Image (tube, rainbow, N blue to C red; front, side, top):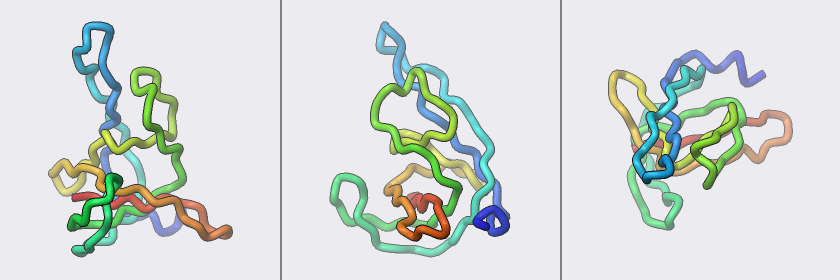
Length: 111
């Protein structure tokens, strides 16, 4: 059901962590179908600060990861990732899982 609403496209730049010399690995880019809901919102970010989000992005469910970036599986998302749409890269401020049992998805708020 959620697939019929995903009319926009973004590039999810996945952070791949650091190598054994602590040099950053090249990020992996993935094109994802989403719905972008533009508009300013005051939200609380992952560390509890009040920030302004410029858009809410709805996407299919993904696993939220906090470690193991060098060996990432498919369908994962992290706060270290960036999202590119309209030619600009945006950082992820907050990730919410949908609490509705009939429609599963993620709400990602970007700066």
